[in-house]
Image (cartoon, rainbow, N blue to C red; front, side, top):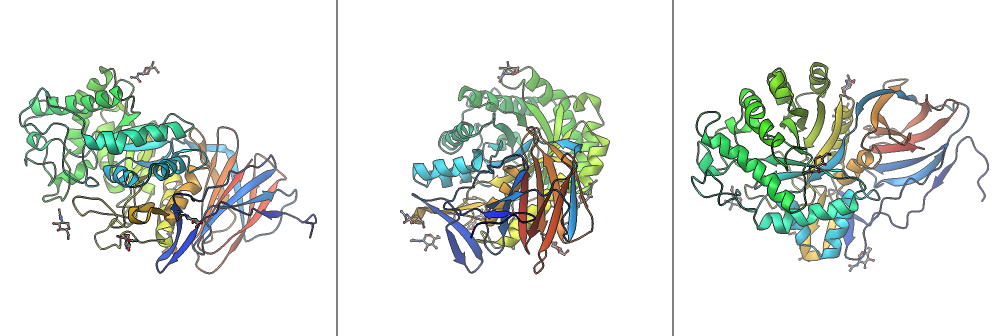
Length: 511
Ligand SMILES: *[C@@H]1O[C@H](CO)[C@@H](O)[C@H](O)[C@H]1NC(C)=O
Ligand SMILES: *[C@@H]1O[C@H](CO)[C@@H](O)[C@H](O)[C@H]1NC(C)=O
Ligand SMILES: *[C@@H]1O[C@H](CO)[C@@H](O)[C@H](O)[C@H]1NC(C)=O
Ligand SMILES: *[C@@H]1O[C@H](CO)[C@@H](O)[C@H](O)[C@H]1NC(C)=O
Ligand SMILES: *[C@@H]1O[C@H](CO)[C@@H](O)[C@H](O)[C@H]1NC(C)=O
Ligand SMILES: *[C@@H]1O[C@H](CO)[C@@H](O)[C@H](O)[C@H]1NC(C)=O
């Protein structure tokens, strides 16, 4: 039957490259093997049209259809108004981390599969990630505890050297990602702990802080160590966009903390940035373009650290932005980010680490978990509506035990690798990230989005540098679909109408 002219037309896209679904008791995963992996279809729309992408509990995974606009306002449950002229924060981007665990899993796959996994994360044909976080030496998602200089008392760092993890698990995949990206990747370096001999407790894990007085030999050597890391990566043709002074600086205060950490109080981080790290970066060849992102800790720590550090103008001058982790988001709402933004509007806020299933009691991995896709979607929407300029997942790929993680601190991953079966599973969370990362591009802006009525829909929207508009609408309801009508103030007399099903994430990309 030929389509007749209706109020709006939906052309279902027959997706020959779609998700190879495996139905498990815990949900639906998309299986990739040596010869097959689903691709995300490009928007491919012309002016006046929009591409609608849907993922759902029922099994849609960034499925695409094309919508044509209509000139008179159709009816619907909710009228959503996008106003691209009302701009909020400028977007930095989305990404994930090059942990040892990520690299070990990539390495466990045949080369062509590892290559495709990276391609699907970083190329514009995939998730289009533009950010990558790199732990400086080991963290919990490593197979052992190591630093780059474990020689006691080596204050001149004569024994400083990168290790096999860098050469086998990090550097090759960072370079591969660079090649697939359309952008210069923005890499963020973060230390979990100084070598044990520099710390009060003699080891990288288990809390503790740098030995000696502030500014003394341990502090000087630690600063030099961080610069040396940038230099060694620089010699391998990898340059960093930013550094965080310390991953989760508050955790070092927790006695018996089970993995690598080091305490920096807000005052210590302020003084470290102001008197040591900031000046050292600026006077280093490999460090002079590297921005400092402070806090890099959970939402509840952000006001505490930001208020102390940024109140000091001599520290603030070195700071580009504020990094946020998501592990306390169930207890502290995203409005905290708006508060911090209002106090320090010229410092960006960026989500630097997040993953579901991290709690000790959580099942990990939970294969095919749709709930976890919803958790991350709701969190990103809240962040974007409260001045976040981007959001980063944690590990890119984990094994069937959600590791490796030497400290048994495993957590869920967006991709689970079954090396023994030469397969990997793309989890719902991977597609949830794509609903944002693939469409809300760097240097675009978060824009104003208004709904005519309150409903089970959670909404956020963006305008890209090329003028295309993006609306993410997530329906948390388990039973009711919502018909939405989208108005766009930049294009009056042009409306899109579609249905957002129960437990469904949609992204509308308007050309
Ligand atoms: C890979 O998956 C595809 C799609 O299910 C299947 O047709 C093919 O036989 C699989 N290849 C291998 C090597 O298992
Ligand atoms: C730092 O930035 C300047 C100006 O953009 C550039 O010329 C230089 O190559 C950069 N240095 C490094 C080490 O990337
Ligand atoms: C979904 O909505 C319910 C009820 O409002 C709420 O308790 C739950 O946290 C929501 N979940 C997500 C992922 O937004
Ligand atoms: C912050 O996020 C919440 C949850 O998405 C939202 O209700 C609120 O309006 C946001 N705050 C601002 C200032 O936009
Ligand atoms: C991790 O768990 C394994 C198996 O339960 C145990 O043998 C090992 O001691 C644990 N390691 C740590 C660091 O807790
Ligand atoms: C592969 O490993 C997984 C998880 O360890 C296990 O459940 C599965 O049975 C293994 N498959 C084969 C073919 O050995």
